[in-house]
Image (cartoon, rainbow, N blue to C red; front, side, top):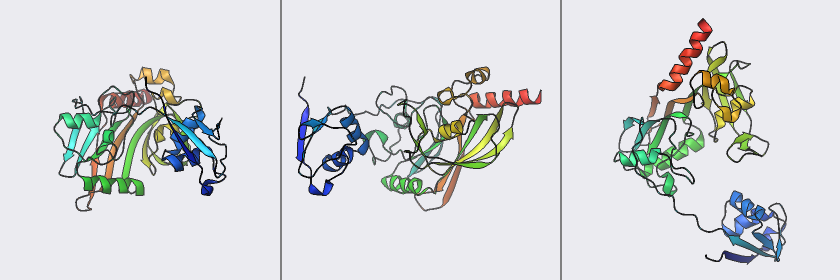
Length: 313
């Protein structure tokens, strides 16, 4: 068993009064989140005394941190993805319809198939920009959400597409079947989203979160649910699911965020009713506007048909 690596540096005078996590991030190059995690686990000391992430440092004090063991590199496994549809392919991009149950890219703890692995198995060469496990990925969909994704094949495409997503000029449209009937029928949810305070795997509307904006419009109302067209202005993890749940209209089948499990079960759903139906952006090769569309997969279409039939009965 190897001994932990410990680094010690004097706090520069310019960081006088900074929080421990902020000083740690500046001095050692960690992310603010990783710095806070190290402090919370008791692996940070100032002048020989353990400190918390929100404690303040003094110029000239000795800041000591026990570094975590390096993580094992995440490998991209070339593995075919059943049901993944390629709807456009050129020298710069590949546009796919991601099926449910597939991750965008490998991550710690995920043992299932990925979009990146599926493309590799199909013989696609994609951009090597970004983190090693996220090559070519410029945006993501939840494992339990299906629909359109664009992956960069060239380095130029990666850079230009990432810029478009950052500048919020990409048109990302989703359809969601939600419980009940939103009031008003069309509106905007502007509420910050961050990590859930009690559940690591969930997100929540929280004052400490990042700005998050979701626009929705009613497509069709049923007896027990409403079909919405949703446009994202921002792209936070689980954004639609969190915002609709906070609005008291969770996506049908989304038991993680408070949906009625009996309704989802009755409709034969094993995931949230949410699908990325349209994706529009400026093509990185020549700047022309392109749009792609996707129909509902069988499980979502079947649930929608049943809800509609029950309303018309």
